[in-house]
Length: 293
Image (cartoon, rainbow, N blue to C red; front, top):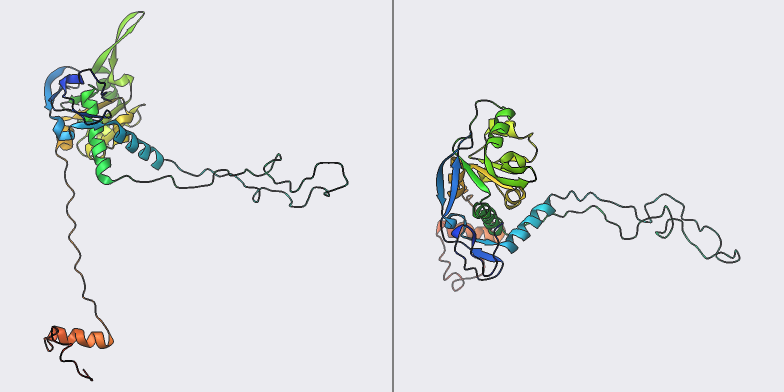
């Protein structure tokens, strides 16, 4: 993720001016390479950081990641307390006269085979942060991939039928760097690390082709979240997926349900009917009240 070290220029020429040390602001456009299926660069795309919030908060990213990981916990851990383990509650031997130290039940946590003192029990670890904070963290995670040069745009990712071999060949053809070794430099490809592939909508052929490749995850751009984006080392997006991230579709507003009038009973019901019929002026009703009304 993008760093915010005092005195060092922001990566990729991005402007820096956050109010705190954990927040970095970016104003300059970010240039991302566009490649084809053979790995050749066919152009570039300019991204405005404002489309993704224009700033990155490490603290918010950390809190949202912790939330996602906590929500994934099953919480099924369980230990047996002293009242739940097998064994008699009878006193092992009498209190006095044996010469031994006094002892009570066999099921105490101090004895072998006894219960666990204050051990874990099944519980729910899930919780939720404010929705606006979660959405802001997702935009920050995507922006950090662009800033750190860990995102690549591909011009076309469509395939006719599910073929894992085609996706593997494409990932091996796209080079993202070099690794120095004793035998010389070695090209690093998308196949060598973890990767998140983002598509515009659900592409069944791409999903079925890449789902069994180790370290590769396929998701529609609309289903991105902070944890999924940061967990994978690199991000591969189609042009359509990039546009979907820039201009997310807002959910349709749900029409408000019509409220049914409350039908009252007794004296309140009679007043309600008279008010609806216009028989009584309710502004002066209490002034004209008389017994039997």
